[in-house]
Length: 234
Image (cartoon, rainbow, N blue to C red):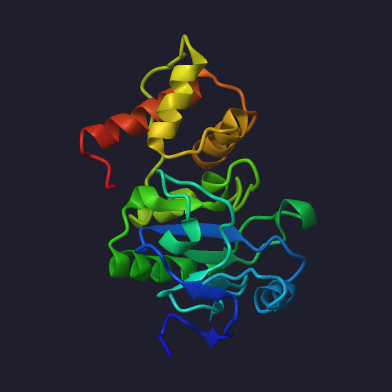
């Protein structure tokens, strides 16, 4: 067994990939217990699964091999990829989520996630801009891993993009221009307000109101600028 994997709990819920791996999607389980989440992801009738689950004590469970397509992203879109399940490795972090008592992720979970994620990114040569949350790829349906997830911890280890420091307040005269820029960054903007909330949840989690303001505009501008100048690790 891989030294980063503590147990195997094979799920029958997978099929063959139709795309190469180019993303990692992070989730929370959103259930009352780890046992309930594991049972559901191994239930053929549920038709949901993930490649890995990380318990609150740091135990890493593998459910589906990385070369197979696990079923967890559902209807999703990121940077034009609409079959997120085929293109991604999915990691579920045990947390009751917003429905059952959302709480901070544990230190043990983050300590287990860091080397696991590093190995996945290295194996598949995944750009940091494609390390995303479930809410990023399905903004109209999902909130996970949520505003308490420690993205900046991952960024310190160069496992996710860091939050930029806006130098100005940027108000878009035409909201449509902002949403086109948001789509350019990667989001599905079919539901613009949901996409904006997802962007806030990832890049400005202290206030998630779905309202376009100068700070949000500046954050998006800085992200696109870093990418266009080739300074962001894409």
